[in-house]
Length: 275
Image 1 (cartoon, one colour):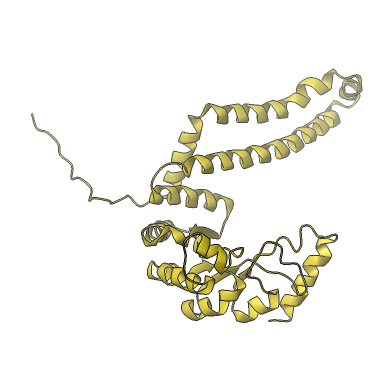
Image 2 (image 1 turned 180 degrees about the horizontal axis):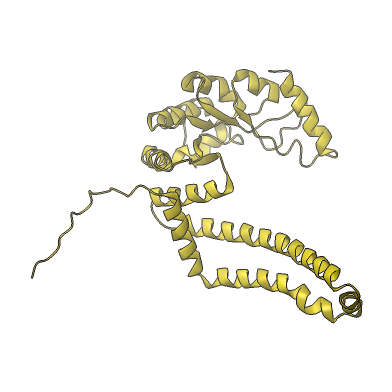
């Protein structure tokens, strides 16, 4: 009687994640969670409800008797509307739940492989990781993303725009914000990452480090004369673009404005003056 033997994989080696494999694994995992079945049943119930209840009302019953074909089309339209609304909510809740579960367990590479697979489904082009996680985490993230075809580009988040030198000292960092951003960016570059998130104050320095091929995503954008709020390191859209920003992140100057469309147009005009 002969015994079959297999070679043990090298220590720390992980198989290259395939998109379809990740997708099958996620579907299997979700099918084993009762709450997901309950949510799916809720969506189906909301779709079926109009077909069960509405025909019992006198108005719909008369419509069915007078024009059955037209009434069926109207009823189908109502069901499709409900399906779009509750189906969308189901996808949002399910995605949030599965992401939350994944980030409580597993290794960096497996988490990244699962996350990248889901982001591919959503059509995401950019994926952020915290540079403060250290070189081992950044290298693992870059290695995993590079092994997945069509994966989003990794961006290393450096120092939040709400932090100034005093806030950094409070968490044990003795460097200035600019020095800390450069330190983290150099570490990311050594790990193969070429995209970063930083404040407008550090754009010019990081552009010199990454060269024209680097991707710099810049929050902390405030229009000329706009309130800083809780942000400490800010600049105007025009200044950030002149210094070499690739993308601008603009939220609060637009969303709470009395006229968000007008606020967005004003920011676009500032941007146009810089390019």
